[in-house]
Length: 116
Length: 109
Image (cartoon, rainbow over all chains, first blue to last red; front, side, top):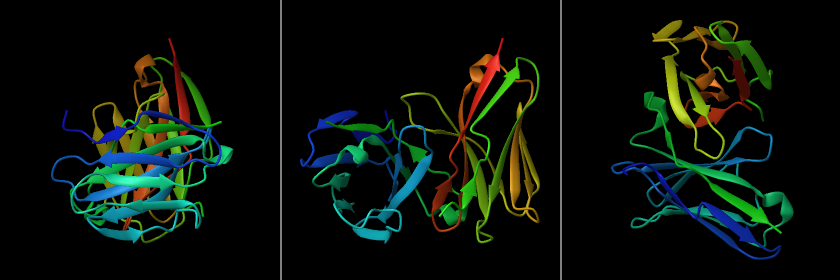
């Protein structure tokens, strides 16, 4: 399967714990995007990364959330001290080039975070 | 900020009829528009797109129309089939891609 791989698919955390969500983009894709879907809501942009660089993090909450896309390995979305409101589906997508070139982005299956 | 808006949260149509899903945007810098389809517990999948220099793009039963002056696009599905039942997201891209809130389409047999 050469698609975007996300893990874990489901994650349960207690309030105050840390959540780490991983995303391996499609082969040859160097652009990664993270989106969050809250229950009964649409896809909210969080962050756009290129290898080792954060290009746009305007959708990311200022506190507790961080993202990285290292030279080697998957992209990581990290949520510290989780709260119930962080419960959501987190989708990662990737593209081979910038979307300004008219490229589509390809989504993973999502990671469902539940905070209890 | 809601740069891409889908004002209808749901739509129900009869099998064989036309489904029309609408989308409005505010950012005139968007130069590419896309529709994605999403089934429950799965990631969105790309359906069809249109460049800002065009006003129509057709792919089988799916046609996307773009009205730049009105900052409006629509997705037409004809004829609609029960398997089309899903959530449809409108997206627009400039330096990154922004999505609307989605419209849940139900096609009744």
